[in-house]
Length: 114
Image (cartoon, rainbow, N blue to C red; front, top):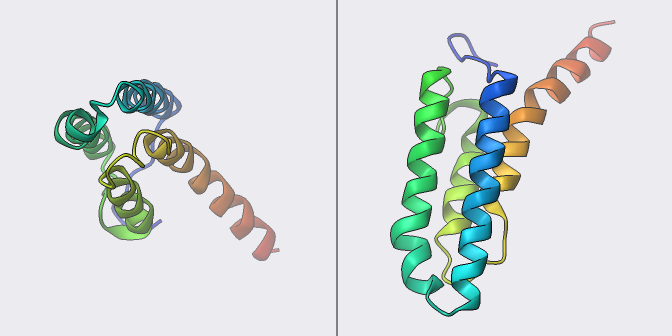
């Protein structure tokens, strides 16, 4: 991680995972009843983005810049594709990435520094 970039706590990660699962399930349900093309990009995706941004900002983790920028932009862009957002669990995958990536990175660095 770059200087000044915080780390996500276990509780914060679990909260984001919970939010991601709920939002993705709501998007899936809205897509099934054919209102997803309106509800998903105009209500659910901005709501999820705001919650993720708020939690990550609390932990001093940039969502759309820094080391995790590509994953953040990929999640946002994937969720803005009409009807694909209802069937691709983008927010859940992004939450898992946020929880796992720093641990994998530190594990790899510890192996390489030997």
